[in-house]
Amino acid sequence: MTEPLLEVSHLHMHIGTARGAVRAVDDVSLSIHPGQALGVVGESGSGKSMLARAIMGLLPARAARSGSILFKGRDLMTMPVKEQRDLWGKQIGMVFQDPGRSLNPVVRVERQLTEGMRRHLGISRSEARTRAVRLLDEVGVPDPEKRLGNYPHQMSGGMRQRVMLAIALACEPDLLIADEPTTALDVTIQRQILDLLRRVQTSRGMAMMLISHDLSVVAGRTDRVAVMYAGRLAETGSTREVFADPRHRYTHALLDATPTLTQARHSRLRVIEGSLPDPTAPPKGCRFHLRCLAATDACAADQPPMESVGTDHRIACLHPVGSTALVETGGAHRGR
Ligand SMILES: Nc1ncnc2c1ncn2[C@@H]1O[C@H](COP(=O)(O)OP(=O)(O)O)[C@@H](O)[C@H]1O
Ligand code: SF4
Ligand SMILES: [Mg+2]
Image 1 (cartoon, rainbow, N blue to C red):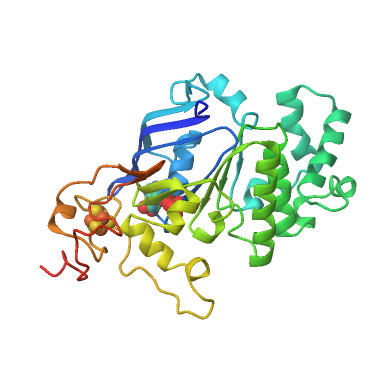
Image 2: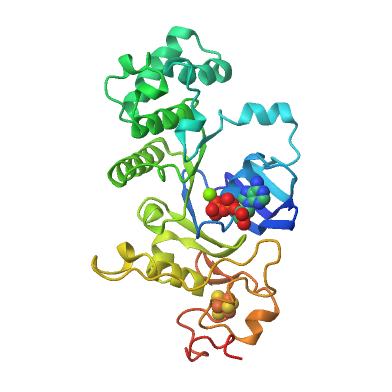
């Protein structure tokens, strides 16, 4: 297999707050190969955005990170700032949830779209404009020539998000990081843009990290998936295998709470009882143990190590789904 494009090892990010340090990302290791799409999923607050920000070096105030983040074999943590600046926007593109905030409201689409190309690729204004038209067309913006003259407020939310995507793709990055890129949009538009994202990702042979709290967003649109819980990785593997045969108890519960993926349309929405632990004082052992129906004393004692349960399928769970050693009585640990 080829070398990973992005290889994150033992990444930690802590954020200082008045209540103590938030352990937003805790010992996360994962990799993305060239041309591959990795989904990152987990409930809101599980650390997905902080993982993306730790990778991108966009740390919140009073945050510190450790570990290593290799991009094409070079560590982004120690790379000189000048080189990093050249990397972001050129080799790694980003799209966030809210295009209203990422687009400059007083600058026309044309300039926002061509600025990066001219800076990073050193091309002329007219060449950048030609490329801009082609890009808008690629991301499904009708009448692209005319749209170049628009200000963001003259476009719908869906169109603005397409423009953001065009900006992120402009310098032909090798990796696109998309953090809940469609959450602010209505469901039909969301689906269109997500499908577009996957189409562009595969046709360009670009790698992608697609972050969402919604499992149905990454299903069918990513090759591999990483499930996060309370700052830690619970499970990683091929998207197809993890969704068809989840082994970590958290992934299993999360899938159960996503009826569009697992059940008939009319079934009642189930939720995972309880809530995420206090990020400044997470419980010892498996972070999920206070909510897990299969928890035992061992789960509360030590953090379960990440172990292989198949080709490219890893979990951090002492009593995986499907293991015979445990009788599922429910609330085993809490009952005592
Ligand atoms: N600027 C911040 N200061 C302190 N804590 C933060 C900050 N941003 C996020 N957090 C905390 O970090 C944890 C992970 O948040 P986040 O990565 O945004 O979750 P997700 O993207 O999975 O919804 C949460 O407990 C959240 O409250
Ligand atoms: S069985 Fe134990 S290790 Fe596995 S998710 Fe439940 S509490 Fe965590
Ligand atoms: Mg987030």
